[in-house]
Length: 122
Image (cartoon, rainbow, N blue to C red; front, side, top):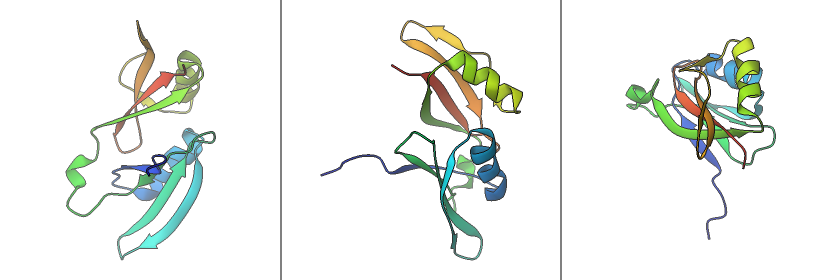
């Protein structure tokens, strides 16, 4: 029986730069950083209060996925406050937070140009 999502993969061009972004700017925890072949490492990071992590890895032949909308949404307690905190440390956003009937959200870009949605908790 499936219990949970272990990780989602985020394609990256520069693993060192991506690791620094997720750990230093977003405050994620490094779970593993292991050699994986001659040109890449298997890197997993996780939000400090989350169960699901991100693998910062690009399968060979999938480089065109880098810098796209990921379809991944991460949750925070206060979108406006988190937006301001992340903006202050250099995180890029598509536009300021937007309030919708279903909740407030903002689209951020990681160090590789990948877009993730930041939304409020329930």
